[in-house]
Structures are given as structure tokens and as C-alpha cells.
Image (cartoon, rainbow, N blue to C red; front, top):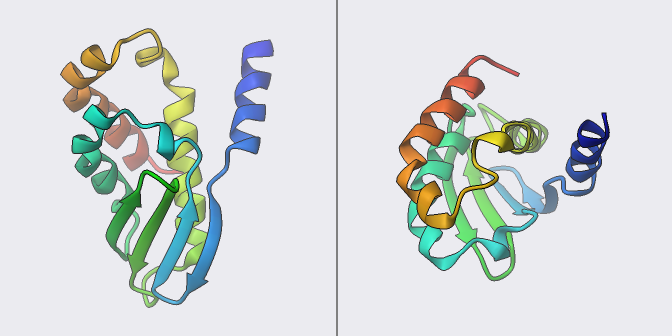
Length: 128
């Protein structure tokens, strides 16, 4: 019960936030992006692939220094609200499944990234 409450509080206070938005471009504040270890940044293609599961998202640019992400999208296919809901849904899935990776070192996580990606991909494809 306490663990579930802590996860809920964490997700509530660590939601992805819109910094700037115009149709087709969305700049987001991503909690903890500035804390991604340098040697893990080379795997951002996994994150990009997951984000692009939302129809209409075309391009993702990361700024690890400012914890911001620029999302370019087709406003005919999606919008700010859908994208933010999608990203918060993905974030929740990652946190909800922390038992898969929480006690692993960065090296162990690196060695298992393909497996983690497949698990997350399947979870996300099931729907919201």
C-alpha cells in the first residue's frame, strides 16, 4: 500500500510539463533528463522509438543539460494534449515496472536494453 502511494505521489509531482507550444512544435520539461548518465545517452533511439508510437510524432530532440525535449509533430494527426498524455502514460509504465531494473547497475541495464525495450513496447502496444 505504501509503495503504491509513493509511486502515485512520485508520478504526480514528476509529470512532464509543457514549456512552450505552437501547432507542430512542443517543448517539454522532462523530470530527471539532466540526470541521465553520459554513457546511456547513446541509447536515446530506444526512447525516440517508444515516443514515436504516438501517431503523428515526427521528430524528437533532447537537451540533457536543460531537461527539455523538443517534439515536432503533424498537427493534423495529433496535438499537445495527446502527446503529453502519451508521454505521461509511458512514464507511468516505466515507473510501474521498476522491479525489472531497479537494483541493476548501469552496465546491467545496458546489457538488457533490448529486453527492456521489448517489454515496454509490448506493454504500450496493449493500449492505455
